[in-house]
Length: 292
Ligand SMILES: C[S@@+](CC[C@H](N)C(=O)[O-])C[C@H]1O[C@@H](n2cnc3c(N)ncnc32)[C@H](O)[C@@H]1O
Image (cartoon, rainbow, N blue to C red):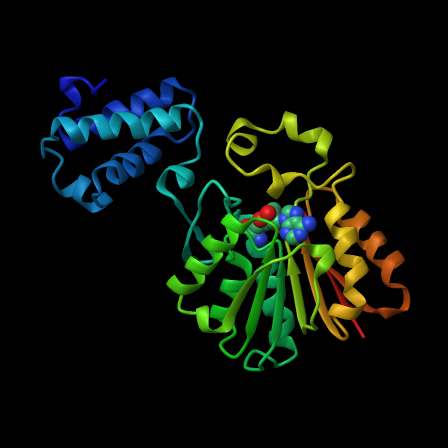
């Protein structure tokens, strides 16, 4: 069904979309309406402002309708657009990948702070990213650390394709390798390990918000009975994979203490330093250990 005649211009379409999104209970309906109308028409937001009176064809009106209907069903805007901004760069996302979250930028900040304080920003560091998804962590680090090389592993072949595509788009493909491999199988040695593994307890998945459980792949969310299953697999491999260096992990709310305890138990005297970083909301979001 095409939007009504009142929505036949750019300005009208934005007003109509805003009202429809508001009625569906979407927060910030005006902002989403502008993004979605522009995306449906292949236009920029500037064009919406400069040519409010421009008339839409019937096909364009149908496209606007379909796009807005997806958002009314609580599909995140980034999913509809097929891309997400992470640490100032654009990453392609698909149904095979987690939609990267701004909180995960805490992990990038932590790595850059440590590497910077050690004066190693220009060193040929070897970085391993376990559960790479879109590749947002390893590709961002390769952009920020121009001499580093990185390997991203994941159990999802579809996610690995997206990660390869993103690393090409960002111009770091010649320093990045993506492998179909599980955390428990990881080999080789690295200087830095980063991981944002699935960390939601299996029993909590059903209670997640619709825009998370309905659109992020289950294997990117489900961290097993206590949410820590993949962390345990990584901790077992850490002594051989990271002979000396830092391992950085994203954690969910309230998991920082549990993970620090898990790492201490698994790695005993190998831990030289243990630290945590908070996200912009003040929650402990990144836990790191330095091994020697
Ligand atoms: C929470 S997502 C993180 C994706 C991306 N690193 C990010 O920060 O947006 C976790 C990823 O781990 C992958 N994964 C799940 N279990 C895994 C395992 N046992 N070994 C390796 N990767 C795994 C999932 O397929 C998913 O892509």
